[in-house]
Image 1 (spheres, rainbow, N blue to C red):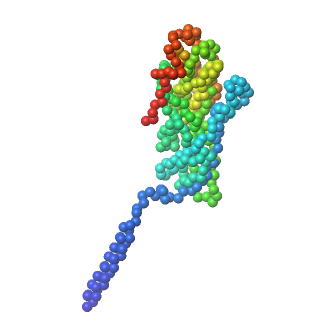
Image 2 (cartoon, rainbow, N blue to C red):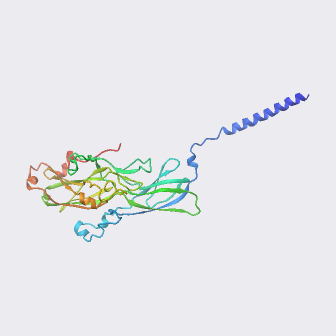
Length: 356
């Protein structure tokens, strides 16, 4: 009798466990598994307040050299402040967290309230409204840099003052305005009061006012353009230091009653600034080119060694070359079959290479 009761109790207990297990399994069938834990992790907010250093030329000590020049209008036909860059249309923060993937956040130019996951972050700030800037190696805070697009000009023969042993420089388009700043270590954490991050956006692109002054034959000139060699090909976003590699900037000029003029934008000189840069380093060669197409179709090139002028102005300034002449023989040569307004540079037009 006892054995029979024991077997019945065992059967009832087994049945009860089976029912509980089936209920548990059925309740799990409709739950969706979440593999994106990052999207549900907490984010602590802070406010970015951005201001802009609207300077177009800066000396090594942080000062401006041409600001106190008293005859801007009489000499250059403009005010110093006319060259100041504008505040951009928008701002971007590139986030490199210690854990997890990097992220980009766009915001208004003056900043916004943002949220970051808890922990340590490295942050890059730069304006997001550029057209010719190319951002490279953005997978890494240490390697991220800004460069510009390749531009070719078949009639440009390079820097004639460069040593034969020096590498031939690539030719590129001018960069448009770029501001930048960085935060090497920011800790996102819960706070009682709102955290405010002031961000001063420094210029990473500078301007050179370039003047080509003619002494004879300007009346024969129909088109003008130029090139400036020996300038930095890129700038690192985590420091503002320019790359050691150099490039030649190609640009158009405008005709003036005294010659030709261009406002040339640049990252500045290569390998600058850094702790190893001193005035005793081997000087770099900087050549200024002026290419003119005369109204009769003839093309002439002029080259000037402006290494001394650039050495004194590593990040923007004024470059002047004088004494350019077009002879009457060149100006009056040939017939009148060429129309510079129709034909332009023709087969010698600059070509901007597409991005890969």
